[in-house]
Image 1 (cartoon, rainbow, N blue to C red):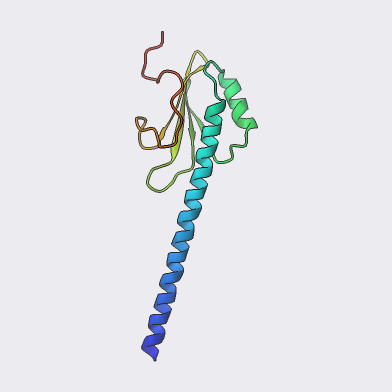
Image 2 (cartoon, rainbow, N blue to C red):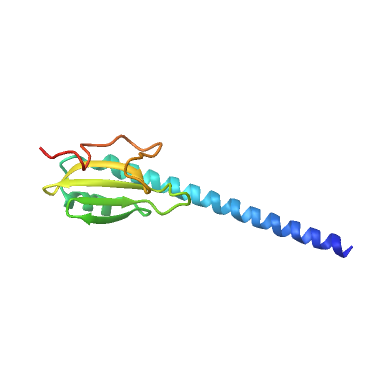
Length: 132
């Protein structure tokens, strides 16, 4: 009888842990999709030739609660979604030349070469292409 109760408790504990992990995975996945939708919405509003000030104003006025903007250098801005398991969070890189948007691309956090599935095509030349 005592042995059966221990098995029941262990099974209950296992099921509670499994349910908790499933809920955590679902929340992380749903939250990640919301952030990806926000970064795509901001990407779609950015126009080549837009000034840095216009871009910051646009980002501040929008409902981009999950995104983090970081000025990497005078001519490079990163917009990041929250960190996710498996390094699948997105980063939007905005390149500037003489204070104007020159190029915009979305990549995975791990590499600037891989465009995530579902991300829009790049706008403008990449940072590595020569300015004319």
